[in-house]
Image (cartoon, rainbow, N blue to C red; front, top):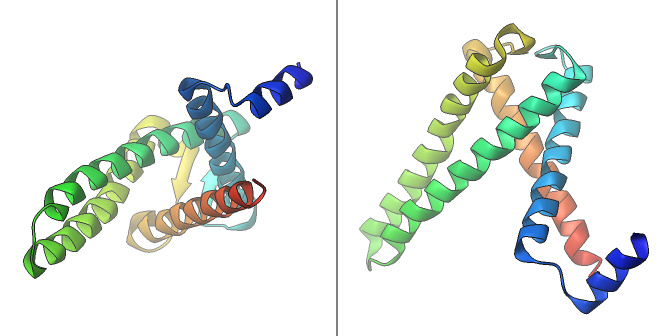
Length: 151
């Protein structure tokens, strides 16, 4: 099987669906690892079990991708318009979407997992959650950079 994968890689015959599957599976595993790390080393993050952490990582990845897609769609509306005002509105809308989505994602986690996943601390755990999301995004970017640099 490994030889087949290596041969396909050199032939460049991975389909778009295979590439997307690999990418999102990889990012889910990165998210899972970061969640586990915060759970183990930071008292403000509690995740009850391995399976809950994995499910939370899947939910986080899906919701983060939806957020990014929405932000890009809104940005494209303002990108097409000339002038300073559209640039300011683009920046403000991106900030509002990216920040507001964290509230939605935190509530989705709360509804989905209840007391099995908890973020403590200031503003009902919002600060801890944002720190975890920043950690997830930083880890994803680091691994993406390493992957691209190996090409």
